[in-house]
Image 1 (cartoon, rainbow, N blue to C red):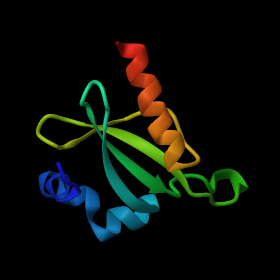
Image 2 (cartoon, rainbow, N blue to C red):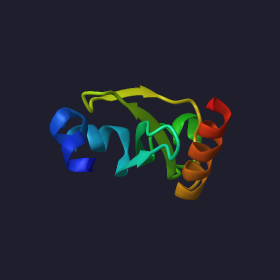
Image 3 (cartoon, one colour):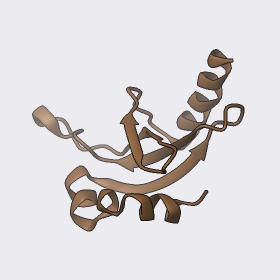
Length: 96
């Protein structure tokens, strides 16, 4: 599956206004290697500058539903894409 298919399933999520409001920079579709579950990984500045904190880029993950619509935001916040990929491997190992 490609990002273009996810964009087509939920175009309002990827609108210029939504992207600017949330501070999203880029998107990737990632798969769980063992489970095959699909995720949308986002590099974003979202909410990092609250309460006087400095703005910082980080990664967040949403599950993708069967119909490719974007589902729940998962709790973890990641510093790098490598951290995201490591979490996906660890998370899958724990669910097996």
